[in-house]
Length: 505
Ligand code: FAD
Ligand code: SF4
Image (cartoon, helix red, strand yellow):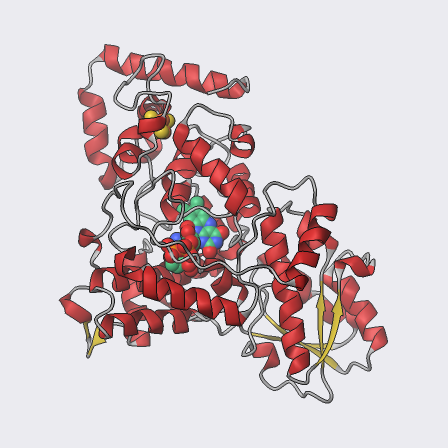
């Protein structure tokens, strides 16, 4: 599979170079059933092609079917049927896929192929799915922070015996500063495309012309070698200030001190633990401070692992939840970027060009707006799955459905990430360049986030008022005079009507 590109993956552990055949295929259905960003398709296919070359160079037999070989396999099952008729197959070994849809397909292989199928756990994570289930069992609410502490103890990362390094588990109080536009910010690592990548770019340009996103410039690493260079570069240049500016947004600095390592970790070019060990060493060597290193490691052994655990926790489809009953269609400007709201315009155009936005842009700009506007979480989920290079359902869906849209009713996070324009103004320079005024409340030129924020709380009062973390906000709402309340609600109503009529906002 395209996200199993690790030489130490469980399915390869005892592979015999002379007898076993490693089969890989580029399936048209897999890249078009969800119309992924062109850069993401190039990234995954080129990384697969390079991985196949690495396997061959190591002496493995590889049967690799390319998209341009004219294959018309509709599914992995179809492809395997053809593969089996070519090779003398006794049994199939596969690492458990990361997505529920594909796991369900794999479950049908034994019958469809009349062969023994061995499905091995994906052990590239710190916690197994079972381990997360055991941790979650019997808890009324799940909180990442407690799970994260278990992972710190399990891995020994930043531990001083049984105690956390420095005496605290979490140093976020020292993090999250706004950034000044004249701050020196290193450019992230970029790899020049080689012939394999260039061929893939031409292929995808031809086959996926109507997909969202720009192919060029393409700077992502597609080999483990280059992904390791990207890791070195991040540790050396950006990690020391990662914590300080983790939540900041600047319109001329798209990456700030973020690592851009998620695509490599998600497809298997880098291992989560090797990334964390490198960060830990940077702290031990005095190269990066504890607040940066702890914050970075928490994202990987905390949030990343937690999201995977949540995705696999229930039996049902995680993406079907809609606690707030939101039903509005996704605004067209999520694709075109044609809006006067500068924050959204910036994030959407960056997303189109880079297939990347950092966490706060995803959470507090496009995520918050969609939730405040009452957009159907399934549509929001589909958008995020399409537009980002690192989007794989197991990590994207809990982040979108759970964290950013509160569609799981608080199973994953303790409160909805609702905010007015003041948050974006504090953490970015977007508002300075916006047609709307962030300090205005209900006027024609007032920032849309402001009225939508209060309207969201009022609309969902029955479901949200009991949440202790929103208590203060509901008290403020109650204390407001009737005129002000009416003003907010009628401004919000006018904005939502504009959305429904597909008018420019
Ligand atoms: P950095 O800021 O440098 O963080 C370091 C690493 O920590 C990341 O590479 C990633 O591996 C991990 N990480 C950080 N936050 C999270 C998180 N919340 N969940 C899981 N891992 C995390 N991440 C994805 O990998 N795929 C997605 O499809 C995805 N969709 C998201 C959708 C929304 C609405 C939100 C709010 C977050 C989403 N994230 C997703 C999490 C996070 O935004 C990205 O992992 C991060 O922006 C990747 O950029 P980076 O490598 O520069 O991260
Ligand atoms: Fe976004 Fe409002 Fe700021 Fe404009 S004023 S950039 S819409 S938060």
